[in-house]
Image 1 (cartoon, rainbow, N blue to C red):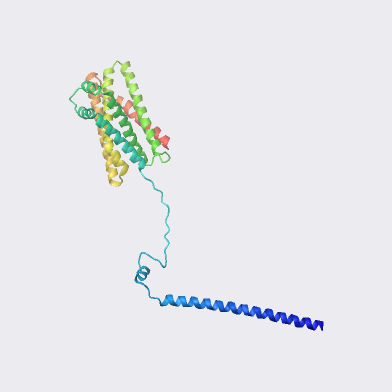
Image 2: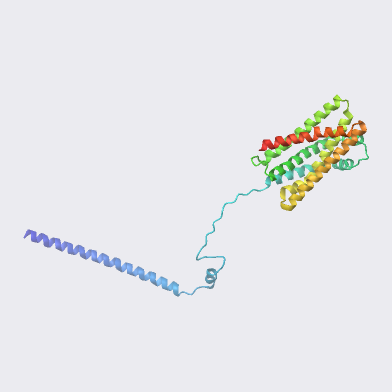
Length: 294
């Protein structure tokens, strides 16, 4: 009887638990059915709702897609500006403007006397040596202009890819300054040894006067070479070489005329001097420069 009573009790408890499970399942199914019915009603309302005009326009717009956004993949670009060239050129122009405003008469006489071949070189020297301060400033301007000119050429032809712009400008400025300082000292020593101080001083005056002219003439070409490309760049480069070559040729002519009037020198000896003191050092420096940069 005890066993029968226990079996009846277990069956009764199981029946109650089954009824609870069935009731919970019925409740969940009813809630799910209500939720599905609500979603269906919302979708029906959205499908039957009238579409506004701006929505229709945006959906069919050729450039703006609000329903199906498009993804555009872009690659990061590195900006290589010319700020260094701009600041360098502007510094040179401001420096020349200060010289022009402070010593305008000296610059005017410089151009007038440089192209006045009938005037004796001694008179030119006496007039120009009265104001040594603008002469020094214009010599510095020549070193900066010529150094920047060479730097732009080396940068354009990619002859020094591993050297920064400022380092290259410093190297060219130091090389030019060293060349003319050594040349000045050598000529002074030669003039003292051979007792030709007047002739050597006249030649030195012509050399540095030509350098001053070149330093001023290079300013507009620096702007073109720094900020132009294509045909304009090639034209500016060719014209700058032509003008610089013309200035040097005119300097050689004035030097020969001046020295020949004071010292009876043979033209062949003058050519030997130009080859030894003008051409050979430039070729040697050019070779050392390319070897250093490579």
